[in-house]
Length: 134
Image 1 (tube, helix red, strand yellow):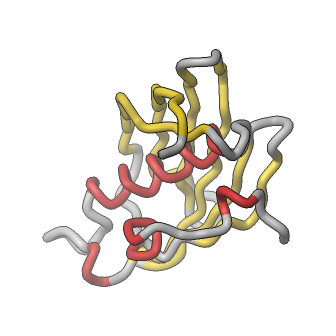
Image 2 (cartoon, rainbow, N blue to C red; image 1 turned 90 degrees about the horizontal axis):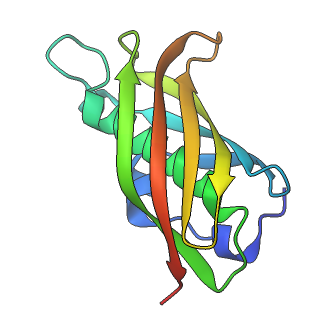
C-alpha cells in the first residue's frame, strides 16, 4: 500500500510498539494499523501495561488526523483519554483511528484497540493541535 509522503517514515516510538500501517483512508480520516505487544510490555498480571496501550491508541488517533493534513502540517496530542475495557494479551493487536472533527487549529479523533479475534480491549478519544511541520 502506498502511504502519503508524510506517513512513510516510522518514528522510534511506533517502531518500538511494532506498528505497521495496514490501511489509510485520507478522505474519511481513518486508519487501520497493527502492533506487536512484546513480552517486555507485560505488567505484573501478564497483560499489556496500560501505558503501552495508551501509546498504541495515541498513535492510531494521531495518524488518523495526519492522514487528513497536507504535508506542510502536523498534529500533536494535547489530551488522550483512554478507557481500559479488558486486559490485553501479549501478541498482535489491531487499532483503528477515526477523525471525528477537524478545524484549521484542532482535531478530535477516536481509536479502538482489539485482538485478532475482534475482542475490544481499549478505546480512546484524543484532542490534537494542528501546527506547521518543522
